[in-house]
Amino acid sequence: QVQLVESGGGLVQAGGSLRLSCAASGSIFSINAMAWYRQAPGKQRELVAAVTSAGSTNYADSVKGRFTISRDNVKNTLSLQMNSLKPEDTAVYYCNADVTYYTGRYYNTGDYWGQGTRVTVSS
Image 1 (cartoon, rainbow, N blue to C red):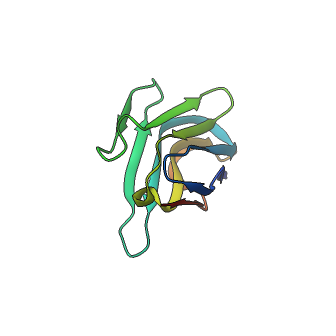
Image 2 (tube, rainbow, N blue to C red):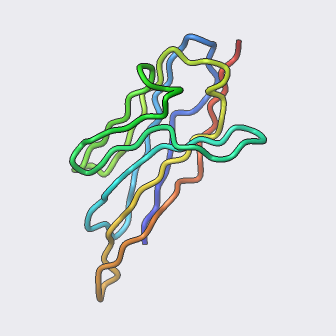
């Protein structure tokens, strides 16, 4: 009932910037928390940044001051502005959202993931 589609990944040199976007679609009633996660090769998926529906944010220590998460509650989109990128930021980045949706008969809440977008930072 809900789909998340990321875009904006790519190859960038260290010190460069990228902006990731995530668009949610489907029978959405409301989106609660949204977040970006990443998974580097051979490592576990980790939280990068999160934002509540009210706009409160939190960041992993490794990205504080370099990344900015934002959302548009009207368009149901999520963004991640990544500046001063480092090789250790190389990973597949995933959009995550806690969504209340309408099934046609009742409301339900589910946790959804996008397919991921790859970010590669060269040194």
